[in-house]
Length: 173
Image (tube, rainbow, N blue to C red):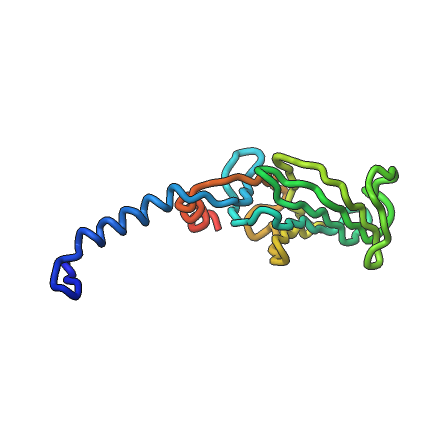
């Protein structure tokens, strides 16, 4: 189908040119993503678009204390930086040294100013008690939506083309 512009000339070459530019841009433009994959197989489980300086939280119920625990990361340059940990109860899992700043916080405890970078980290999807959840800039979802109970998940930040991100997002959620 050929379209004519206002002067009556065919504009098909211009449309083809614009389509080619658009197609190429999908593979040139890079976006930051949180890539979640199986630690054992490497299969992609989920892909989430993130921004530099996004805050990512991993929230779960501690298996011993049966109370809410969370770890909070900030997105850096191809790394995740552990910023703080929050605990509702004192006990198993709560550090006893004071390497980081410590305060009582919302009825619990908070270690902060940790600033420890990770290229990747692994969490195992809770099978019964933990109810692991992923929080990205306030939007929360359960691990179980993209993984199986007991599965070890690797979390990492990477840059991919916009086209690859869109394909992965469509195929892996």
